[in-house]
Amino acid sequence: MKKTFILLTALCAPYINTKSKILKTTLNKSEQTIMSMSGTLNEVINLVQYRYYKALEPDAITQAMDDTLQAYVHRDPHSGYLSPKELNNLTSSMSGEFYGIGVVLPGDKEIEEEALPFIEIIPDGPGDRAGLKTGDKLIEIDGHAIKGLKIDEVMAKLKGERNTKVKIRVMREKYPDALDIEVTRDIIKDEVSLSFYLPQHNICYLFLPIFGEKSAKHIEALLKHAQQKKCKGIIIDLRNNTGGLFEGAIDIASLFLPKGTTVVVTKNRDNKITQTWKTKKQPLKNIGSIPIFFIVNNYTASAAEILAGTLRLYAQQNNKLSVFIVGTQTFGKGSVQEVIPLREGGALRLTTSLYFLPQNTCIQGKGIEPDFIIEDRPLPSDTVKWMTDHYGRESALKGSIKPVTNQEADKKKKKEKDKNQKKEKEWKEKRKEWLANNYLFQTTINLIDLLFTAKKANPNMLSYSQQQTFLKENYVIDKSITLQEI
Image (cartoon, rainbow, N blue to C red; front, side, top):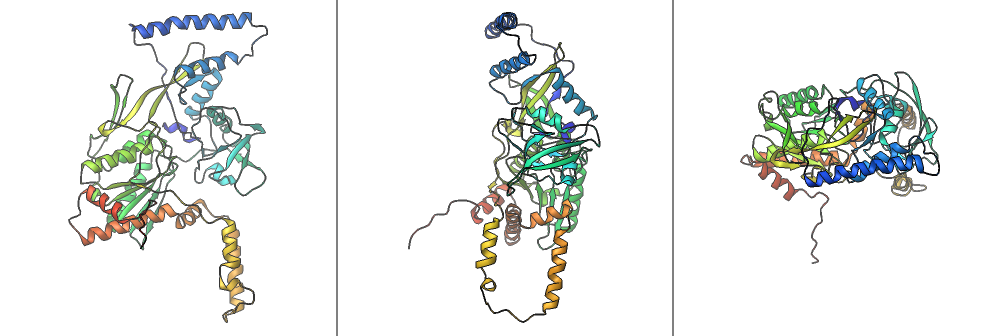
């Protein structure tokens, strides 16, 4: 994904080719047949245009071209025709003239449902400050329903000039009615990240919601801190990271892999390599001594899944690295799109190649399978909490014996606690509170602790495969257990 989509990102981002031309001049028999049929297609369009019993709507031909293209490319969700207006919106957003609200949207081509969920709210962005939450479902923008719109159209409506306002309507879990929220558009900080040190476990953690220009520096600072502390392990949280600046992922890989190491390549339909990305500098010294655990989910996409997948492949080949992936299957966005301008002012957005990781590994449509497949677990529902508070404790029973306490002090503490809870927490505090109760985060900590204990007991456990085998054999994670009746 390109950096320019950080203002409002979806699960794909194209490359605009302003100098496109047809390179191939000799056609095979199949291609000759297709080209001859294009003349028939033009004839059909002209007949409908001038002989149909009523005048066509101006947008009819645009829709027809898009439908024809979709049939031709087997309903590729990332390819399509862009009208002159859509192309203008796209190029304007990439030029930096427009600002966004700081949300991440799924990559569907056309919205068939009434609502579209926000995959992630960029921390401390306009949407976050206005009160939007991850999981909110967008249903209207400035009073207009989003159903039937293309994802690009939704993105264009949410973007605008700086300090302008957009009113959106969302559905939120546990709220019976839709919520109207006004957001002031602003620049989105692409260097957002959040890191913590866990003193009880001697582990470093980094939350990276999107790749930006400073992402590699943030991770480098974390790695150096972990080396100073002689940490047991490092957790890099890539959940809901849909990519961002592609070069940022290459810079991060450079912290781990020798200079000149291939991170990823693209291949065309003839299976020929069209572009290669390699690391640009020497890695940090002795970085392989600390195990790296990536947390991913089904919305970890593009550059984020390429980074995690590539580093794990090198770990499997080389005992100098220990890289493990925890969570659920990643999104599987491994295709490259070009936006090719057309003579009449529109453009063709076309998938032109696929990404391949080392060992000829293609992630398109498959994603990355974690070493430890762990489904995150939601916190107890309000019903469960109510049952626990009213029936699940001795103190909840009517007339239960209460210990003798300083009632005045207790009342003061309760009043202070209620006052603090009413204060709006900053996003960092919200993230800390969420992490403290997050099952997947806790499980990853346990994996690191277990691996550290095993290596301490058996210093000869050096190879990556030994470590992986040990963890899989000795940690029960969301897998079936054989039970034999006694």
